[in-house]
Length: 237
Image (cartoon, rainbow, N blue to C red; front, side, top):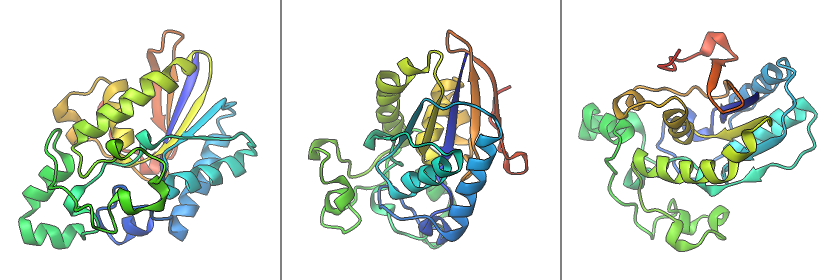
């Protein structure tokens, strides 16, 4: 038996400003830090010994994990993987979601945000928001840095990494992943065997640990959000 704990980072500065963030490397708000602290306390109350910690390359996920580890009194290093990054929103990056909906229509924005295989237009490589121009990603080979992504693209990179690097360690080991709305949605699609329509409606709350109990053959026994007041429908169980 093992446990997999998935945590979407606490509220970020651009979450608060309701902007498409993607690969732009913004930090947590004060509220986001409080969410991370609460996540840490909720996990601590489970009395689970966590063997491995993973995060994306992005500051908001890294700092969420650092806060959680401090509360857990864990000195273990965590592994950073760019493959766990948020979805790249292309030319939508940096735009306010409400203002964009007024310009192009709510249906179009929803299509870009939640469709399975539709990509927004490419973000110019000259933009300061493009990952090529962000210091955080300087060591990622250029051929792996996207100009835009669909959820399907995000799913493929997240799952490729998860299956190779994380899933084999889950046998009788407990793992925590601090990541992002769409990278965690991708993992949930795989773990819960959700179809392309179901994943469209799956919401991932910030700073609320999702704990998944797995059998020895990695079948899901139980899953639940630890903060019941901020739970979302998992479309399973």
